[in-house]
Length: 518
Image (cartoon, rainbow, N blue to C red; front, side, top):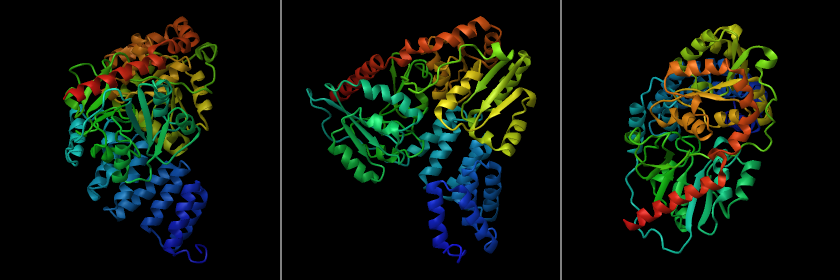
């Protein structure tokens, strides 16, 4: 029908949806081009066309299409939001924030737009911790306070813990929730996982096999999900998503459980007073440093607030550090490109100056697009002859194997890496991190302290550059770390799944006891 009647709106929408679902981006491109011959500059067609270009990693083409849409239709909220997402992938943070703000202004009640604006502020070195906290609090005031009306917990019963997440799949969150699900004391705790995202894979099946109760609430509205959780008798409900995609914070705002917590998936307060506690540690959130930035009470585990499970199929670290073969130190950053800020770029330029025989390997999906890569590297202002750019890798094994080309990993600031830091260490690559004054900028310090690499934690930009340069000049230490980091990590609290889960369960029991006495 679309070939015979290229103007048929319903057929075009249906076929576009199908192409997107099946990731048939070239077909969608052809359909859109055909339709634009009859309807030049049609808004909906241009948006679909941009989606097709983005699916093929043609980022600048997608930008041009979406900029055309918002220029012709400045109130098109969805186009502003999609443009913001592309700008974020291109590390154009100021423009991304502006786009998300315009999307939210055009459609004030849209939660997805609100979440994007809140989440993206964490990446920016131009947004102060106080400004970010105020924005989250303002969002939280959209929900009325709710108190739990019933008795809390009967002594002698198992404590029912519910974990709420869209990311029970091959995702960073799964790497940190898996050891807990595996080691929970089933005699003391009843565990229920509430999956609220549409993506499932082999990791989903593995995690599902670890718990006695699994609920898929993806298609349930908040009221129905609330009723289900209440019927399940959940005592502690733990959000693992914060303001990331497919979260169910409005469900948490209804308070389906008497004790509600947030953990792992979001490096900041949610802004919801209906969530009672946020789980962290004394390095990521030193006492007295960040309480004022939270609507939740801050509760701290005695060591790192995370416990890591490495991929079972991870390749072995290279026997020798890359410099021993290339004669050049290779610094690397595999973090989200959006985390690369002007402050960080200043540090990297200084580092390359201090270590003349060095280069920087940057990995990011947007670097697949030659035009986007050239624009991005020019904007970064790094010497082109000393930067290696790597785009998308087809699978996790090839992604991890790329660490065998890196001598020293450089963490991002003010939004540190989490999974990327753990992966680098697992592959024998030390990570140098710069700490800040709020959680997102202190996760690297927490991970490295737990792994026994406190000397890689830096308190200033100057120290960050100096420490990386010192490591670059200490080839025996780099070789020792390459050979021993995996064993060090395995023996550290960061991978002690049993011990970590016992400490977490102790915290849960203390919270139940405290709230039962009130």
